[in-house]
Length: 369
Ligand code: OSB
Ligand code: MG
Figure (cartoon, rainbow, N blue to C red):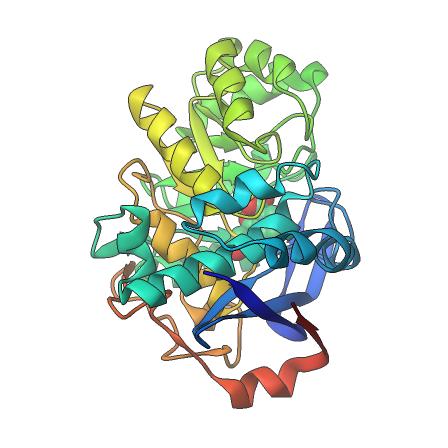
């Protein structure tokens, strides 16, 4: 593969309903669709996941653009690629900026899979034909609202309910949720809102029999999470703390968590995701695919990695209509009884709906080798 042309489509899409976490509320999602064209005119697509503001990780829409345009795209143009696994090695001369790297690497993977006339899932080594779907529910205006959203989600078939929590919006909420729904598969995500000083308080979460508590402590920490995990029955799942296979190894060796949330963007791409899958399989650490409120292309990549064999817990990859009035792919991703069918067509297995994409597009930049 020699990448000849890359088009960055800058999109802004309004969320169907605002999404709130311990850090604030998002009303829309701004990102890039990466269109990549090789020497034979074959195309591949990727999607950047960084947000406008760096509240989740340090990357933003603007930093990913800077990194892609000034460093990563020139590296891709430099020389041909035999296999997409080479991309992360080529990008390794640039420190971090994983979401920028993953957006481009994802397009290379899609292009490669289309060249092989195989599905992306197959090229990654995934085997599942359908994947289990969980839902991540943002902080709601009231607990009554939350209970209604949970009820609706269960009726729609979601296999696991995750609720966002923050200090003073946690135990009381959990008590009411468990009163209404004593046995549902339930977990919480704190997005780093607590400190080790809250240890005794967090121990009280054990009574709610949660599947896991996601990222309770510092966004870059693994030491204090290890201390906390020793005191908790509830498994800790790390999200923000994990940027690479090395981070996974250290967290597992230290006992900082029992479960790993992988986001392709956060760990720098699909090749790194495969490595994490393989390591976690060997060490019997369950893995699941997190979400970044992706549009259809990012969603399709998430579906493909979730077919890997150690992704044994339901992920946050829901159907297109969870977040979007209209998605940028066709057909849209649909869910049936809490399951998404893995597409079997070449590459990501969905087509771009250009009419919809152009509706949401606010800018376009073309780069030629
Ligand atoms: O912590 O997993 C997270 C959304 C934005 C940023 C961080 C997170 C989330 C979610 C929702 O939990 C994931 C999704 O439904 O795409
Ligand atoms: Mg999280």
